[in-house]
Image (cartoon, rainbow over the protein chains, first blue to last red):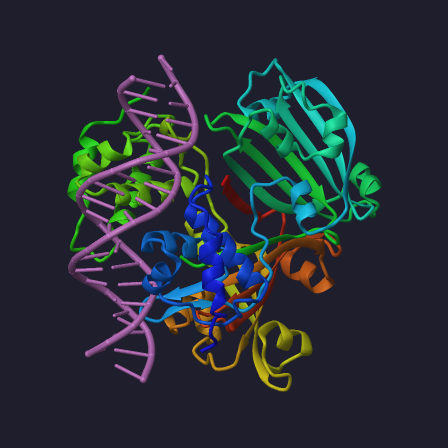
Length: 253
Length: 253
DNA sequence: CAGTGGTCTAGACCACCCT
DNA sequence: GGGTGGTCTAGACCACTGG
């Protein structure tokens, strides 16, 4: 079995900061993740067992377990009772998380840009009203944005929000993701239901994305909810399938 | 705040079986999930706090926490420090899990059927060899299946596996999902990387699925790995977008 | 058989929300 | 300020894997 570099233990232990408000298990898993992704902990190597690891790092076993559990859910570790914990072979890992496309693209180090095509308050249509759980005669904020990556148009993002988010100006939306702006406004999204599909491009979409009319589009529909369970956003997004895909890592159990 | 039916506590407590090998927290979360989905615990109602709940049910607080955590990850509960735990409003929830399409369809109570179009051992192509990490001159099992739901063709499933799965006969594949058969053979899949996209249908696909050539298709590509980190299966699936979508529930943090 | 991860318990302190 | 969930600890027993 491949071994770990020995000085790594001390480095990790020293870097843990009990004064830091971020949880110990989080600090630990972050450092281990970095060591795995950088290859310092080699792929396929066997980890120390939990008790030994806890002792070596000066934390309790439950804390170690919690840190390792996080890495298992990211698909970086595989654990088997009686056998031990192993680092899996290197594989890309971009979970389908609760982030805006802007954050996705930034993370994969693309240059992203946004053009706000529409920013208007409209009368609530029946469909939007039922999706957002709003009264039928009210008003909603309707956004349409064109998203670029490396200069090429990648996606058309259509969003509907309850009115009252005056802070969401077109200028700010051009620079920041929708979810990030909402977070700044104190709106924290907790749960979202999402549906991924495909369909033909309309003439408008084809023109915006620079593809042929009737060509295939990847679609994503999403309703996002608040802490309190009230719907905050409904979005229908379409993506150029040659430039965008949804990647997931699934872990059994 | 809406309250719980009082007798529910006793029912749940009585139904917990410490002799049962299934973990206590799992038993508990299963029962709570059923109570929530059936509406016995009303949507929007506030739960008892953890300590009280643990006392009432006769288990420790960590066990209660673990059970509740599972329900949070399924999007059934929302917890806020200092505020409490609430049941969210009713929303469908089909997470993007590690299951075969057969299990998906069965769960949503459709009649599913499978026709095995191809079941052959072929020379390993360069692409398949690199995906599965197999030697270039070896052989792979190549499967092509047509999946029906309610009598209509829904998907064309193309799969490549290392040879040696003789038990995967065409007859058995017509009745059971691939993953289920592999599980019966003692092959437990632990991690899978999955990519969802869209493209035009080829003539073959269009004919099989009963759509127009060049029409949009929803695509899914997947590599599945063993406990030991060795690739077990590579699949490229295409779906009729009017009959199939990928639904996910996302939970923040 | 020894070693490993999986589970459960008991108790403590803290950060945050609400009124 | 009282109550809530979030975190951390210490120790115990069990189920499974492997040689």
